[in-house]
Length: 218
Length: 218
DNA sequence: ACTTAATATGAGTATTTACTCATAATTATA
DNA sequence: TATAATTATGAGTAAATACTCATATTAAGT
Picture 1 (cartoon, rainbow over the protein chains, first blue to last red):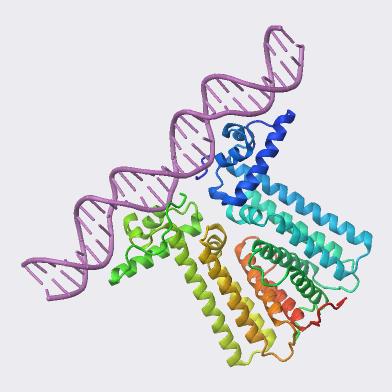
Picture 2: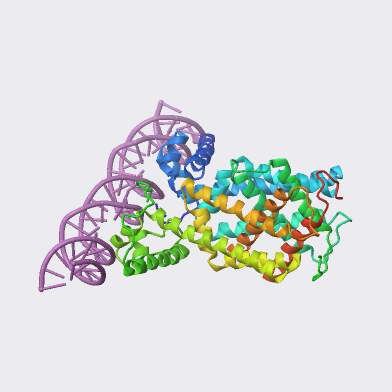
């Protein structure tokens, strides 16, 4: 249960092809087992069984249960980053307007989280992560904020004296709301399309409102 | 480790005064232990030790580890609800304008979460909760949305054709953002006051923008 | 003072589970 | 084909931990 010793680098790295396949199979199995059992009850033996390999094999490539979770999380971070840059590319090339751009952003993030909502939740919240991974998460978030800022800045109708803060809030908002919405697929009492529309509406209103420090908007 | 059997009602209920004190002491200890060790590593023996009672005593009043977590969570829900109604009362009595009202709302929620940020996080995310508690959380959230809606509706400058959705998004936003912000006290790279201002700004802009279903705000 | 009910004790148990290691099977290489 | 390197095996181990129960202590009722 409680981790004995902390090792994140594998005992052996896969060099032949069959072992690379094995690693993939293990990660896939881990995904499924964590999804259906959670982190604590997602035992390494169960993962190995599901993967169709022996427990010994699993520990050849992952020195600890934690290492498996970290590997899955790293995959997710990479994919998110990829998605984000893809999005920026599309928006620039296709000359979408601000509303369309944000719409695609929110939709994209919602899709990302909707894919494996339980897994994300488990990895991000239920798993006790080492500090270094926690740092990586924060950095990824700030990187995302900068990327979004870089794109939004291009739209002339948006002028702000404090883009840093604005974009920070926007990224946090989209991240939080889509995550929440996707995390409870059964309990959604407003439809998906409406949800996206509302979030986009809010962000645009925010971006277009007067940005002076202490104005009584009212 | 893994829960053996699920019992949430205690073996004995405290009738004398000393036992009521004991229950309180145990809950306080649980708070501290969960805060510093997390849920999984927050063992019942540790909680008992911290409380200065024997493990047997603990199990007289809490039939399982889970029951302790549930008790703590119920306390939190009650307190949140109380805060919310208090807030509504203040706003109505003191005739605050929309901006002030929202400011207090966001500040209040931020304070709530900032109190014991790690504990909240552990109870809400790290602890495997029984379905019935999960339902209670959702209901509390919807109740909160209605309360907020009831207040905001009073302000004449806000007119909307779909208050339900708007308030749902607002409550979710405030809940998510303040939770996130409070959860990482070290990593905040925008100051607290600024954060609150920005969130309020966003909500007001959202509330005041045109609410027609498909308008190109751009 | 005496009886009964309530409360406290903590060593011990049953179970779970992350992880090891000696050995076997497979593939590459010479 | 012979040898070495890589990969796979899975019964077994050590540790952790949620929870019990027979007994002791304290308070309430009379």
